[in-house]
Length: 128
Image (tube, helix red, strand yellow):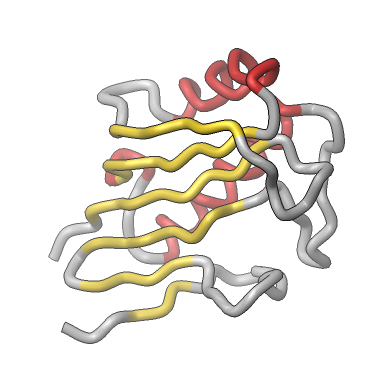
């Protein structure tokens, strides 16, 4: 089945050669999402909770542009810059996934923008 590129309205230019999302056979792959504004500047510097909210709102925008909801998200890849932010990230994350939680993994690593505290990539099953 052919793939469909998903780019929500108002999306800024990506930092590298990728798109916000790709839909293929009812499965949406959301690219790693940083807390960036339309000009690719990091927002909410030093505030992991606010950055997580921004990232998850961006992820939601991609999922909704593909015709889904956050309930369709089945897997998240969570990257954080510092384990000290783990509780703040989880508190916001729980607001977006309040029912049955998607599977996920979480690792600490260096992010492409040093001011970023969190990056999230997602997989959603939108259906056919």
